Length: 315
Image 1: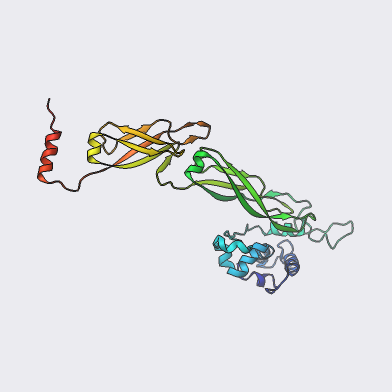
Image 2: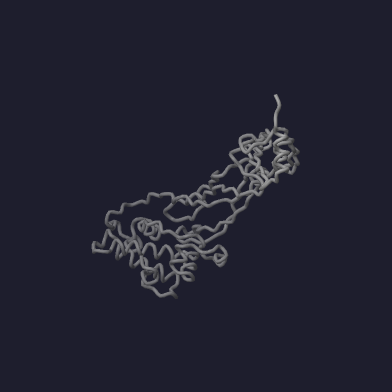
């Protein structure tokens, strides 16, 4: 649709909330497809729904007024949202009938004007509203490997639209959601807060879903319940043996002797020193150590001879 929501509703940029509601009421009744069969009325009705959806919401309106439709739909940095602006990418739900029903509080928009016993038939709309739940709102929850190893508590503040006591008007209110992160949770774990999305008179609030995203760690790479640890060693160490010191996620220092000859595909498995298991926090996966063998860039003749002598095996 066009980028000027004010023009769509035929109001100026100084229009009050009451002006916006009055304009939407007049134009939505005029262009509703059930009463207006003119070409373009369906498209106009949809444009009106999107314009009202933005301008009736203080946060979306604040973003639109400051950043235009590009900022509203493209998203703005979170720091610009501190003044009440909508910082997420806005996408209209493309259901203008839903906007229409939410505005009028039912299927009969003429209820305010007709008080006799004869119902006014408005197109194909039927009495009563079937409430449909809004689509889930998904957000990433970034957690460190330490958070997922030990478990932790996260508190997240959300802003949502809440219906007022009159059942028709609404306001934006903040709420704190608490997430009890369990030890051993994995990437992709979903935490669902049922019906914590925006409230509307004729819709069921959306579920808010947080999806665990694991941050990278400077020492370990997680593979399921195992922890991968890579260390550099010299060729001498690979051939003659050595020990590896590894500080675990719970602060212990492991000294692991390596007595085998280490080749590029060699892995040392330390049982029970990996990630906490979510189904049984008393159990852990394994620590798997891999090795990056540093070969010398060049050898002089004498060193080559000594290595050959050292590697000669007698029956």
